[in-house]
Amino acid sequence: MGIGHTRWATHGKPTELNAHPHSSMNAHVVHNGIIENYGELKKEFSENKFLSQTDTEVMVHLFDKFFEETKDSFQAFEKVIESVDGAYAILLITEKDDGKIFFAKKGSPLQIGTEKGEVFFASSDAPLIGLASEAIYLEDNTYGYVTIDEIKVFENGQETTFVKKALATSKFTAQKEGFTFFMEKEIYEQTNVLNDTILGRVDSEKVLFDEIDDDFFVGIEDITICACGTSYHAGLTASYLFGRLAKVKTTVEIASEFRYKDPVLRQNELFVVISQSGETADTLEALKMAKKAGLKTLAICNVDNSSIVRESDATLLTRAGIEKGVASTKAFSAQVTVLWLLALYVGQVKNRISLEDLKKEIKAIGKIKDVTKVDENLRNRIHRLSKRYLHGHGFFFIGRDLFFPLALEGALKLKEISYLHAEGYPSGEMKHGPIALVDSELFTIALMPETLLYDKTRSNVEELSARDSTICAITPTDFDLADDLIKTAKTNHPMLEFFEMMIVVQILSMEISIRLGNDVDMPRNLAKSVTVE
Ligand code: AGP
Image (cartoon, rainbow, N blue to C red; front, side, top):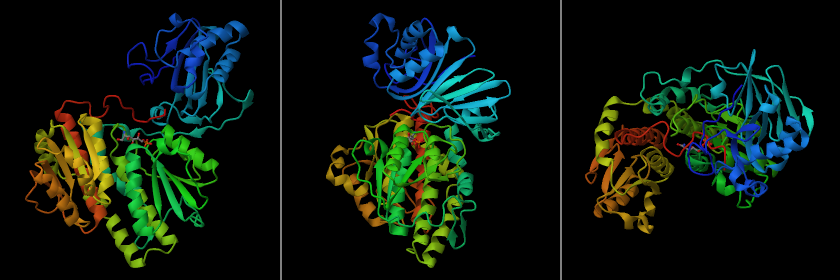
C-alpha cells in the first residue's frame, strides 16, 4: 500500500520539502487542490511542527489531534475533512489503521480504479489504463476508505452507493511511436486525428451530431463560451465561425475571470465549455455556475467521463486521443474542428445557412486532413529558420479575424516551451500601443492568409517593417518586406489556411524550444491539467 503525487506543491517553492506526501507522527497525506483556510487552521499548532510551506501539511497535524481525541482513524479523518475549506482530492494513510487508504474529494478530480486484488487512485483515466479494468468516478463531497477487500464511500456522514464503469483497455495512443517528443508526435498525427474528429459527423450536405437531441438549440439565441488557455483560443476562433455561419452572437470568456465577475446569464443562451482534460478547475466551476443559473450546457472535451463531461447536459468529444505534451496541439485543432462543425450545425438547424454555403463548408472540412499533413520540406525550412529566432526581446504574433486567435495560440505555444516572451495581437492593434516596442530585435510572426483580409494585414505588417522589426511572414504569397518567409500552400478557404498556419506555428515553437535545449513535453512551471484555481 502506498500513496504518491507527482505534482509540486501549490504553496511554497518547488522543493523536495514542499513535495508530497506530507507526514506527521501518525499520518501521511497527498493532496491535489488548495486548502483555503490552512492559515487559520495552522494557528492551532506551534510553527515548529511544520516542515513545509504547503497548505497540505496542516491536514496530517489535524489528523493527529483528532485521533488523539477519538482514538478512531475514520472519525479523525472525517473531522479533518469537516475542518478544511477549498478544493481537494486527498489520500491519507496512517499506521493506526494499516491497510486502509482514506480518501476525500471536493472540486478536484479523483477516481478509483479497480482490478482483481488491486485498487488504485488517480485523477483521470489515463494513468489507470492498463492497470485497472473498472473505475469509480467519485462525486464532490464524498469521502471514505478502501482496503484490498472493500470500498466504502460516504456523503454527509451516511454511506452511499457508487457505480463502477468499464475503463478503456488500450494505451496505444500514449506512446511516442518513434518520435523524439510527444508534442512532435501529436503535431504529426493531427491529420489522422482530425479525420477521426469528423468521422460520422458529416455527409455531403449535412452536419450530424448523434450526441445532441434535435431540439437542443430550440430557444437558444446566444452562445457563451468559457475556457482557459489554448481552449480559450479555440473558443475565440469559434466566435467568428458562429457569427458568420450561424448568425449567432457569441461571447467568449476566460473561465478564471468569468467566475468572479457576477456574470449576467440569460436563459436563452447556451453555455459552452471547452477543455482538453475536462478537469480544469476554473472551467469546471464556471460550468457549475451556469448550471446553477439554469442554463443549458454543452462541453467540447477530449476526455470522456471527465468531471466536465459528467457535469454538462451534453458533450461533443473531440476524439484527439490522449495528449501528453503539456503544450496542446492536436487537442486544439480537434476543438476547432468540432466547433466549426457545430457552427454549421447551428446554422443548419436554425436555417441560417444556405444549402450551397453549407455544402462548400463541408467540402472544405473534407480537406482538413490534407492541409494538416506535415510536409517534410516545410519542417526542414522551419528547422533551418528557427536558429535565427533564439534571442531578441520579444515576439509579436499578429493576425486578423480568425487569425487573431491563432496569433494568440502561436504566442502561447512559443512562450510555454521556449520561455521567450511572445504576445499575440490583432494586426490592427499595433498602432494603438504595441508598435512602440518595435525595433530590429523584435520578431514579428505575421499570419498573412490570402483568403481573408490580406491587404489589411499586409499594411499592418508594412508598418512594423518600416520600424525595422524582423518579419517572419507565414503566407502563400510572395512578400518582399519579409526577412523570412514560410510559404504555405494555396487554398480557397480561410479555415484551411488557418489549419496550415497552425501547423507552422506549432512546429516553429517546437524547433525553437529544441534548439534552446528545453524540455519540449514538460516545460518548467506548467502542468498538463490545471486542477487548482
Ligand atoms: C496549452 O498549451 C496549455 N497547456 C493550457 O493553456 C491549457 O490549454 C489550459 O490549461 C486549459 O486546459 P484544458 O483544455 O484541459 O481545460
